[in-house]
Image 1: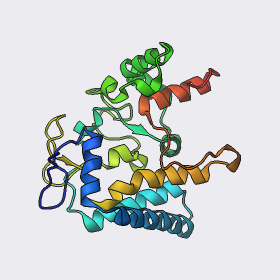
Image 2: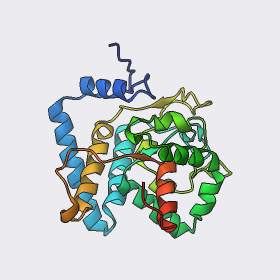
Image 3: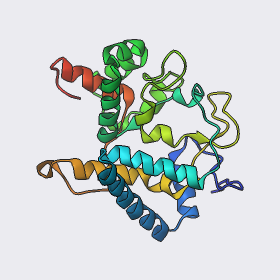
Image 4: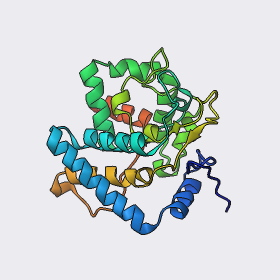
Length: 242
């Protein structure tokens, strides 16, 4: 397999193909490097959380932001540059909780968010109601080219400070993307990007009550935003959680 990189070490192909990105990371970083980065990122997150008395996930975002600001070229992404906000975004329960805290603090009406994204939310709901095994569904493809429910009228993220990892790893260092092809979007520049999903999974594991924990596998269940919104709506309405 040919895996393309450039002078800053960015993976310049396969933005929409996670398997190609994983293969690129395996070639770029050794197992020892990845393990060391994972342990350091986890420890740094806990140190920041304790020192600043903030939730672990907020501390993790600070650690990741620091890595980008000190190890990567300046980003060309900016407010209103929203082409990457027209696809599916999947994240963990821990990330969703952070997003909900942000929405609550800002007074964001989630019913209005759902109504504004009725087309994709309804499509996800019908799929879940059909009885199809959710694990076999290509959720990303289902909502591709549709705006993120948390994208406002000015093409800016309403919960930007607590946006999930899926959003944070879609970045550009050369020019601003001019289309939904994300021609300047990059991944795989930093080793922190390679270990970030596992760190988040560990943080969620450690914040889960011990009685509900299972053996840590290095990952946590991911759901796209529209499905998390449905879970919230059903819970508010007293319906069974999907």
